[in-house]
Length: 182
Image (cartoon, rainbow, N blue to C red; front, side, top):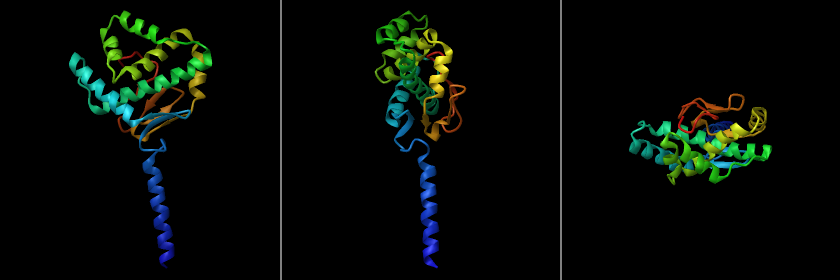
């Protein structure tokens, strides 16, 4: 009698463990894009920086969950920008990104880009936005559709058709081709 109970308990524990690890395959992964890992540590660093910069500029008071939602969307954009660049052959240089931030009528963009904790997230966000102005939408859509995105359940769900993250946890739905500050 003990053996079947033990087997059921082991199976139940395994199922619970798989559910708790979510789709990211590791609790330290926020997302995986075609094998490229976005770590929870990078999300935390950038989210903390975003919260501090937003507070110092008096823009908007962000909760930790809102900051994490913005950051994961921006980091996803960066990884997707790399894929779109590869697919289209169009490159957006760091110099072009810096120039665009300096020319932006909203100085917030340059401030966010200049922050060391936010730099990588902002570069990716801006790169995809700039690519969207140079690459045909069908190339972007096909590339995004063909990209495997595994998002930690705490950030919701990746929906390639709408180029958005939606759902639970930190829950701020974020369109992937919106402006830097959205």
